[in-house]
Amino acid sequence: MPSTPQFHVSEVSSSYWNVTFSNGPINLMDVDTIEQLADLVDRMEQAPDLTVVVFRSDNPLRLPGG
Image 1: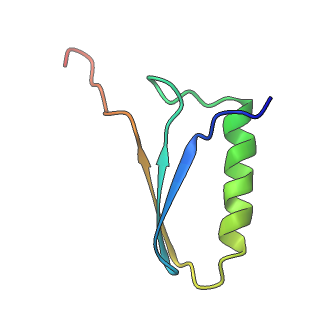
Image 2: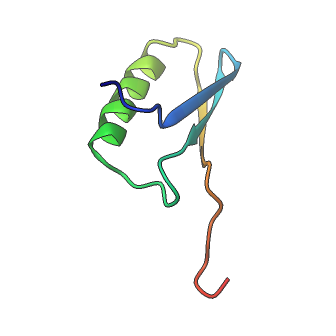
């Protein structure tokens, strides 16, 4: 069974991508995350004009007591 995509890529331009990471309420890193990240890195390596990739979380930062 295919896993749920955890990395959502917005190709703002050929040289600039935004990547949003989402895996549950705390963005748990698991085996699927590592495999999908490896696939994403392969994709980035195949983009000759790509110079900037901004990673962000789909989940807000939760500080203790906040």
